[in-house]
Image 1 (tube, one colour):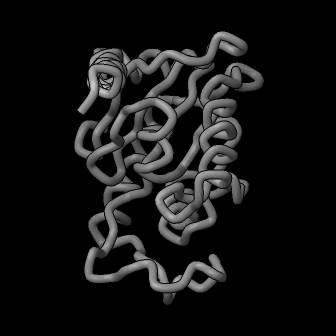
Image 2: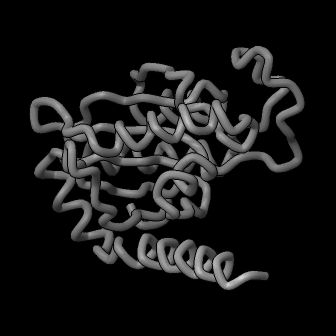
Length: 196
């Protein structure tokens, strides 16, 4: 391996480490911020049934050919829904990937949503499509929500990893971002499914 390649690998590792370490707020601190409004919640779809696979994604409405939410995922999403309501967290726009597991997470947690094809998973896209999808997510993370509410994005591991170097694990985790408009965004931390 050449020195140039090593340098690039070190830069990528450094960027990844910085992104992972940037979100140091506790769940309690994050909830206080969300109560004030003006943030973006990136929700990785809730826990899924890993005995299922995505065998055919030609029709996103056909849930029979996709990996879907498990009973655990549905239960954890209902807990999140109740917590958001009880804590007085104002939710504005809710955007979701067209995959059934994301749509079902949106249905259970928020009851209303817009499906956006540009939020579909990047692990099945080519280089050109991936660039479009990551550009779209970057713009959404940077966009300041309307009317003092919080924006919700429901998507996949690969997309957030590709854009921010933050790995949204486990399933159902919520990563909180402060949108900065033209200056991008700041990753503040995460709320795991058991921390609501």
